[in-house]
Structure formats: C-alpha cells, structure tokens
Amino acid sequence: MDVKFLLDNINEAAIEFLNILEKNKVIALHGEMGAGKTTLVHAICNELGVQDTVGSPTFSIINEYKTKNGIIVYHMDLYRLKDEEEAIAAGVEDALYSGNICLVEWPEKIPALLPENTLHCSLETIGNNERKLKIN
Image (cartoon, rainbow, N blue to C red):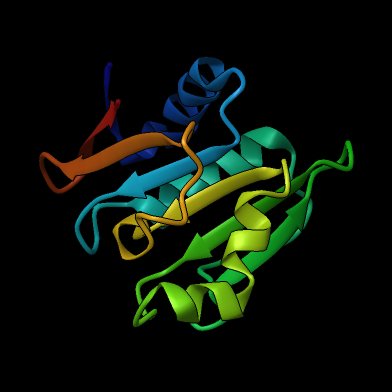
C-alpha cells in the first residue's frame, strides 16, 4: 500500500498509517537520509498522544515515550550503530521484544534482530515537500 502526502499534511498521513497498523508493534522505517523518517515518527507520536518531547535518538539510540494512556513507545535511530552486537548492548533487542510499539529508523543495521512480524515501510522523497510511504 502506498500513501502519498505533503509534509504539511503529515499528521493526516500518520492517522492513515496508524489505522493500518492493527497488531504490528515493531515498525521498520526505511529511507534515505532526509526522507522524513523522524518527522513521520514525530507525527505518529503526536497522534498516539505522546506527552513527552519527541526528538531524534541519534546519539542515545533509543528514546522512550509515554502516551497519555500510559502506552510506551520506543523510537530507535540505529544510524550510528556498527553492528548487531552494539545494538544488543544498547538495549535494542529488549525494546523490540517488549510488546510495546517500536518505531525503528535504519532497521537494515539489525536485520537478524527484528521480530518476524515486523512491518516494513519505506519513505521516499518525491519532491521538496512531498513523500511516498510504502507499507509492505
């Protein structure tokens, strides 16, 4: 399924995305640098009711947020990881198998660690302000 959207309407895309998720808890977000993965995560967290400040976990690897209903959302940015062992040491595997929502940027760094039922999505830049989200 493909969802095209303008960055100005990213919250609408996040709502549409959340309606598709159903039981998937681990979401692998593929895309080039600057495609808008973190921006999409921010919009998804807003729609989930995350009360914490949502930011890029580039240096911390994992950010943990809580929604107003007490749901835990993990946001992972694996760009700086060297290998899967470093991911395990950072607690990535624990978060992935926690049963909580996990939004994973740069999942190609840890292919063997991702749960079998991971939902893979790719974000592609179409123009300066337009993106295409492909949900596999």
